[in-house]
Length: 141
Image (cartoon, rainbow, N blue to C red; front, top):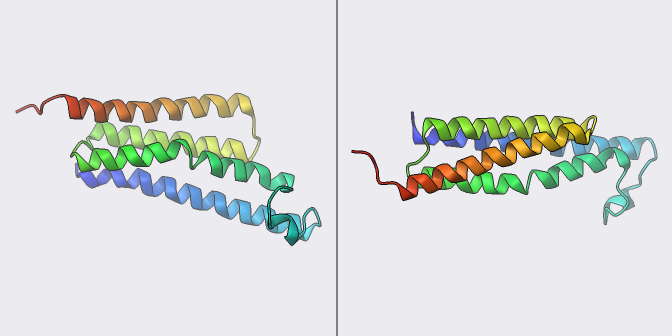
């Protein structure tokens, strides 16, 4: 397996972020169209339409824990530690974030969102453990 395989989950997560931006844009446009908001409301978005609040909050989530994900993926690549296990964990993290996003911007059910966040948190932590082990253990000859 090529070390560059670790980049595909990063690309997929970035695509997910772009999709959430599109949802936010559409929800804001809809709020303008039905009179729920005015263009002035978006100058300083302190009065965000209810329909777009979950998309904004999800975007914030996609710039928190995933930042650590990008760092660990790049670090694994840099030290030649992007093993098959690391790539699988990275894809599972992206899947967890995608399902979390779907729940967050649709039903927003906390009982579903919270465990999905926890799964992503654990997977991200596992990637960091893999990086630490790769750095700490001598290569097998």
